[in-house]
Length: 289
Image (cartoon, rainbow, N blue to C red):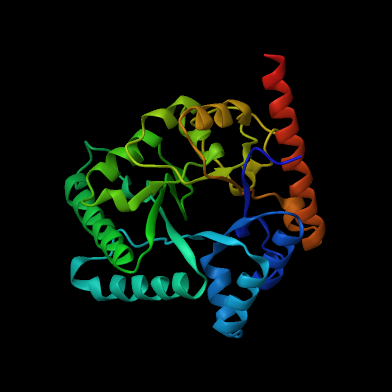
């Protein structure tokens, strides 16, 4: 049976294996697209040639959707712009080497203060300027900027409407997409219908479920679990995405102690099984409605 939902794998789900093995396992278990980890790709290319990487990508036929993720750059002072330039240059090379379409950029770090806080406007202006520079630089290299409503390090999160409002302030925002994360949007208090009101497209959804039983509570890295096995209840998120015309990939990104401690192939096989089960249950529910 042809799969009606397009599933991808995010490398962050599988810290126990290297990039080459990850690519081969993704293809073996029927995935057609993946997201790569920037840290793991950098690690690979410190000891493996670009030619070997590109040969593996060609042999697997995988689409490399994104590189995850460009962190901790919003507060780079303007007089240190050369540092940001160097980071953007390195990332552009990584994307070129791995045939990557987009770089994921976290958005929640741009809201470290409330609008009533001292210094909010100054900090916001600096961060927006840096984001504009990133978007311009990546666009010139043919790379899309994919804004994700999460802040790494602090693991804070942002509602989709805040991320969308930020994107509206960026010139040339036709070069930007938004990457929702089911667990994070649930924690932020978003309803699935928030996907209907975005001003830029969604190409990838980070697909997972939430072990949190209450929204708007601090979360921890292992709170992201497999779809259908948590409190976020992924079915309405899929409904809302498809109703909004979404035709991209539901990319599995979970941070599960169980999955990360398994043998790599067993972990990928389990994720394939869980996604197939979710899909079957989803369409069975649709038929029963």
